[in-house]
Image (cartoon, rainbow, N blue to C red; front, side, top):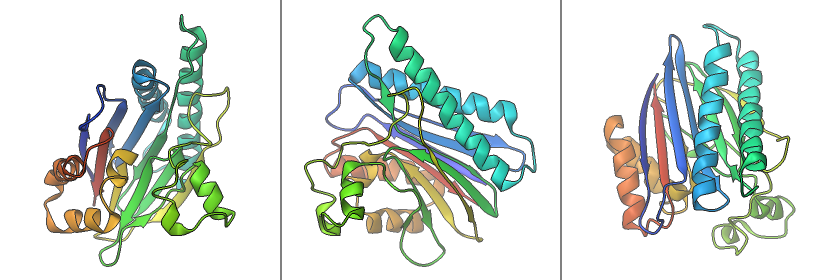
Length: 242
């Protein structure tokens, strides 16, 4: 399994509040994307703290061949560590400012994917054939309204509350993270990204870019496409291929 990464400030922001990381292990790849919130400096700090905390916890406790269920528990612990460190940074800062970040992380082997997420940064699966499939569920007001039948599918992308999170890393002392295990088939690819990509580039177009281009070019091409469409947010992309 190989990882290809890209991160860009976009066209309208004055600071990049996204942080990304990928690390190779003997039997797979750990990857994480965080999109900070809470003001420019606070958001940037939150995402950096969260990525570093998650990576440190995973690296210190992962062992080769660990069962997928145990990997998911470790990923949940990574999110909990990230949450605690961001929350403490906010509490002990001079401004006592509110800080937070999204987090989506995976450990991918050639045949299985374990994921964790909090917020609205996403993990997608692109099968050998067929459309891009969103694996994670957004923790947003709009997603909740949709699940409750209060808005239609087509309203989600333009709803005035589409950017409001109901879960985030670092905004309280504890966080609830979602985890899942998914078998991977030969030729399937995994994409992690912040909303700066999927809010600017349709999923069908993302799938087309992945299928038509070498994986090492994909992050740069996705970023260029998002910027060409307005680049209204920071853009983070990690592509995993087996």
